[in-house]
Amino acid sequence: MKKYVFAIVACLLFFSQANSAKPPKVTFKNKDQEKKVEVYVDGKLFTAYIYPDNMEKQSLYPIASASGKIITRGYPMNPRPFERTDHPHHVGLWFNFGDVNGLDFWNNSFAIKPADKPKYGTIKFKKIVSADPKKGELVTASEWVDVNNKVLLNEETSFIFSGAGNLRTIERTSKLTAATEVTFTENKEGLLGLRLDRAFEEPATKPEIFLDARGIETEVPVLNNAGANGVYRNAEGVSGGAVWSKRSPWVALRADKEGEIITIVILDNPKNANYPAWSHARGYGLFATNNLGGRAFDKNAAPVKVVLKTGENIVFKHKIVIGSDLTDAEISGIAKDFN
Image (cartoon, rainbow, N blue to C red):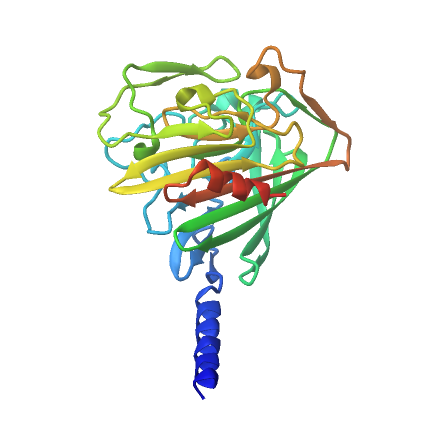
């Protein structure tokens, strides 16, 4: 009798554990008038896909950790006290590049003078293709256009949102199809970018001036360093600002935000061109990875040039992980499964 009771209890325990191990429920709220799709995990806001008319690209903004702490910078959408107001084109999580047929898609924003707009490209939102809560997948379509709205590239992007416990992930796969012959020329301004909250910045000791691909200067001032404690590291053990320009399958950024340790990781995918990507991670809060950087990062690198004839395409796949105090072994395990 005891044997049967034990078996029943074990069975109930198994089903209880299996039920508790169910993946978090992902839900989407389409808000057409606000030009965004909100993404929820277990009823809590994770992020939103935004496509306002006054932005030159679409992005995920804001992005929150599992505990609800916002990891993205507020400016220019919703400025917060004591944060930097440089690089107005850095909004949430985005994807574009600094040299496509000579046009700069990366640096385009409201700050560009109308007379200079012909030098820049814009990514125009077309439609939400699908939203599948069961898969946690949102599929979108957009066009990369010049100042005259001539289409260079058609983009279809899949976002897969997921999470378990204190872990949240975004898997972003973009298929770029040439509407005309298109050339990507090596450039440091790319490819997947994330602009972060003040807590994830490295403490600064002096003002710095940064140049974009066209030699335009942006001064990044020294602010109050209170709360700024971010530290980068990559799969090869390089840490701090030295990760910039290094190639690595993953780069992580760890910081204490309001008493909680949060680690953000960007993973490159082995199927991407020029894997592993060059890191374009800066101490002032820009966290980016670039598969098309080449000699813009390392003068000894092989030249990078991608030419797509009309109808040809290229696919880029990256993964963003937001967790707690993730170890190198844990991150490497996630990277191993990202294929």
